[in-house]
Amino acid sequence: MVKCVSILGSTGSIGRQSLDVISRLEGIRVAALTAGSRVEQMAEQCRQFRPRLAVMASQEAAEALRRELQTLETEIAWGEEGLIRAATLEEADCVITAVVGMVGLKPTLAAIRSKKRIGLANKETLVCAGELVMEEADRWGAEIVPVDSEHSAIFQCLMGCGDRREVKRLLLTCSGGPFFGMEQEQLKAVTKADALRHPNWKMGPKITVDCATLMNKGLEVIEAMRLYRLPLEQVDVLIHRQSIVHSMVEFTDGAVMAQMGTPDMRLPIQLALTYPQRTISPVEPLDLTKCAALTFCQPDLEKFPCLALARACAQRGGTACPAMNGANEEAVALFLADEIGFYDIYRLVAQAVEQVPFIQNPTLEQILEADRLARLAVRNSSNH
Ligand code: NAD
Ligand code: MG
Image 1 (cartoon, rainbow, N blue to C red):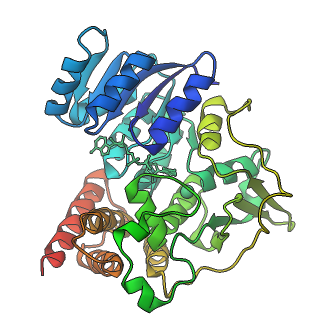
Image 2 (cartoon, rainbow, N blue to C red; image 1 turned 60 degrees about the horizontal axis):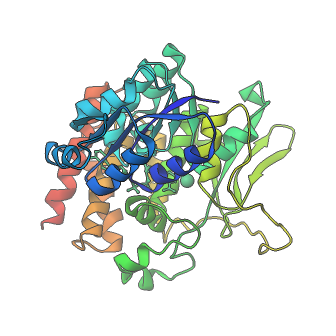
């Protein structure tokens, strides 16, 4: 079990649930907390958890936090430099990456180079620069324990599997989101409020929209390929409306291992902290006699083309994935600002991927440039 944790993105959905888990586990301290702009919530977390360092996204927010916390010894910083300091504080042995989006990339790399265990929630990081992140983790001997429920499920199914050649394929389950089963005509008219109503999970707004377009599952296919170093053909997606089976691994002898449980992110978060041990958690026990029948079917790639697009980008590799991710972040932000419709997300992302010059083996700088160009492409075409 880890002893001292820093959380990047502590005021978000994963961040708050991480603090809830930590408050119930004995013997874990908090080294650093970071947030975007929610000063009051951060001040409250600092009073409760007494971190050595608290980081806000802007200088203005950091100053507001300083005024709130005059009597505490917590040091306050801001911006990317602050995030990187939080990710590398000496006393922390684990960093939970719970910021949303590509901003998580540099701090995650910094934490890896400081040999921290990474409790990885920030999937955009692996989608954009997964090969680089995994290489660095190998080089520095930093453990990556996934927090995303599907990847944690696979991690658990692979415990005790010494040879990856025994894995035939991964089966990522997908709730289908709020628009499962709708006709294309209906889908054209869905609103932001409809998209933000997820049937089984309560999450931050960006990932909730990604669940509605199924882009989230596309990002997770790429995340799984990188984490488990498997080709696209070995990562499949199954719609499973009940979110009880969190994912599965099929082995070469035909055995299929599944990890099941009540949908509650505190389980994978806690496992990232206690691994290789398990301990009592607040997660409601699963009563299989009381839950609905478990069903599985294929996703509809025509109605939800973002998943097909993500698979195509995964196949191409190189800068296709960071371009797609950057374009998606930008398009989802526009959708959340009521500036574009639901299907525009797919249209703008697909266009942007075509517009960004393709590089097969990009450096970190070229990945960041692909992200920047893709965002620009989305902003330019949404203005027309
Ligand atoms: P959220 O929007 O609820 O929280 C995001 C956190 O990041 C907040 O603390 C916010 O202040 C901070 N943040 C945002 N922009 C920032 C910036 N520019 N600089 C610094 N901090 C910034 O998001 P979430 O739902 O908790 O998701 C976090 C990550 O975890 C995402 O990558 C998501 O895909 C992944 N994830 C979330 C869930 C879930 O259940 N919520 C499940 C699986 C994976
Ligand atoms: Mg997930």
